[in-house]
Image 1: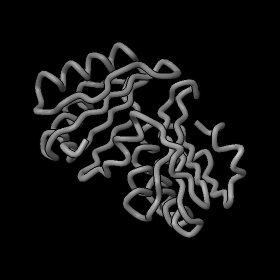
Image 2: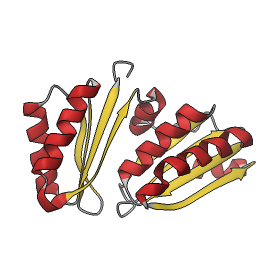
Image 3: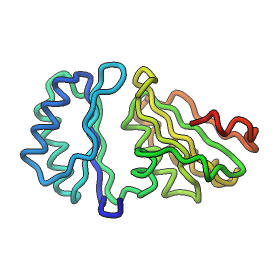
Amino acid sequence: MSDVSCIGFLEYISIGKGLEAADLISKNSDIKILLAAPNCPGRYQILFTGDVGAVKEAVELAQNAAEFSFLDSLILPRVDERVIAALYAPNADFVGDAVGVLETMTMTATIEGADTMAKTADISIVELRLGKGLAGKSFVIVSGTVQDVRAAMDAALETVRERGVVISSVVIPSLNRDLIRHIL
């Protein structure tokens, strides 16, 4: 995953328009699609990588062609590699003294929050779930010391609050160890 320098993320309310956008940007921008798939509730998500200029070009191209179906977008230069890794595989091996959960109404805000958390404090990303089985909601679970998880959560909230899509944020010190196997 170390070759991922910048990511772009596009979220559509139409599966057909999302697929059309994925095709458009893959043919007309110097980007690599990492994920392009439908998601709940009838949304379409596109995650891609490239240099910052190519990612910006792809997002602009997709937004200009979106019509009514475009929901949100994100460009993350220098994305933290833990964010990309968490998209592919949850990891409960690093559950520390505290657990934090950030839940939002969009996949885009959750990715942005997770990246902010990873860059702000010494935390592990336990899980990053984008929409599937959640009626379009998304969440990130992080772990570390109570102080680090609180700092990460505060920073993430500061970053994504203006989007107006935060559902909840919690920091749980000393999570009952029996619950760890149930959070994935």
